[in-house]
Amino acid sequence: MKIHLHQIPDGETLHLEDREDAAFLELQLAGATAVSPLEYSLDAGISEGGLFASGHLSLQIQLRCVAC
Image (cartoon, rainbow, N blue to C red; front, side, top):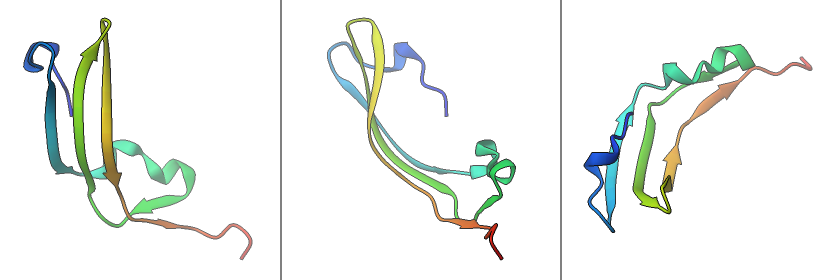
């Protein structure tokens, strides 16, 4: 997901809600596998020249047991 600053109305937030393929997280490098897409519901805004986002992210993952 990319957010362009010009998409955010002055003094307001931009609501973003969607699903994304979780492959970009490269979870396999940590021995994990995504079993669902990454779901998000975020509000993005600009405060004192910086970008902020608040909301919820959800992802189901499968971990490999390293003790077995």
